[in-house]
Length: 260
Ligand SMILES: C[S@@+](CC[C@H](N)C(=O)[O-])C[C@H]1O[C@@H](n2cnc3c(N)ncnc32)[C@H](O)[C@@H]1O
Image 1 (cartoon, helix red, strand yellow):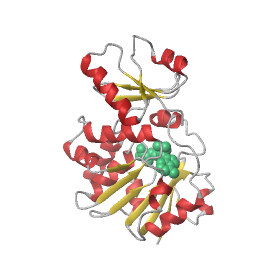
Image 2 (image 1 turned 90 degrees about the vertical axis):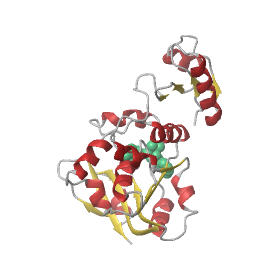
Image 3 (image 1 turned 90 degrees about the horizontal axis):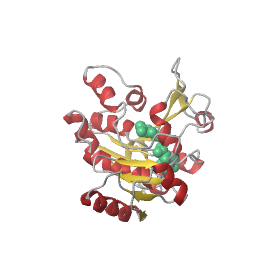
Image 4 (image 1 turned 120 degrees about the vertical axis):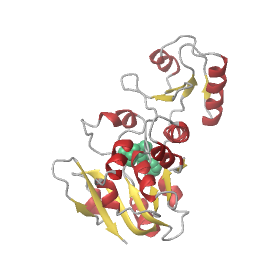
């Protein structure tokens, strides 16, 4: 990956400069004073992605023509409200999630699914999320710890997620057999889904490779109850790895389940 440079917002005070320096240190990147330059200009000048470490939020700019990636709960709060009101959630149903479960998310992304899972499994359960893109993992981890603009139980669900800045295959290989009730994979779609605007920044950042066979084998070994795959309905991964597909009329992504 092309290591980003880290800078401040347009009008930084002393604290903002300090903060951006700290973020650069934690990311193992270089701090570059903003000097009123636009992000587009910085990207062109340095030929690298740009992290803007503001006091409000951290933004990851990988493409000058795409919105930057920053942490937000996405649909998590709405999905949790629906669950609280007795409604259903397709991911939670595919996983058969219950209070007290342990859930390994191999593709954390913006942690929307993990936040919903964390709400359902509750404080007695456990959610671990692996994210292979170190900058995405850093920004999402910071957001999960510091975001405040959601109901208290959603925030508590976010705070309980254990984020691992690592490629899932590497991490899962070190997990004992049957150590998570559910292992979940939601890799980047091989096919772009145009209507999914919320994920455009992740599509521009993030890791795009299709998970290899080894990750699926390890997922099966580590899952006590079920491995769940979310993928484009045309994805060959369902058949290749023997998932039973849950058909979802009028949606472009499907869930596949593999009971252990
Ligand atoms: C489609 S997004 C996941 C979205 C997520 N389910 C959510 O609710 O926000 C896929 C994410 O998984 C990451 N990823 C892809 N392959 C990975 C792997 N082998 N290990 C860890 N992370 C991976 C990508 O960088 C990206 O952030």
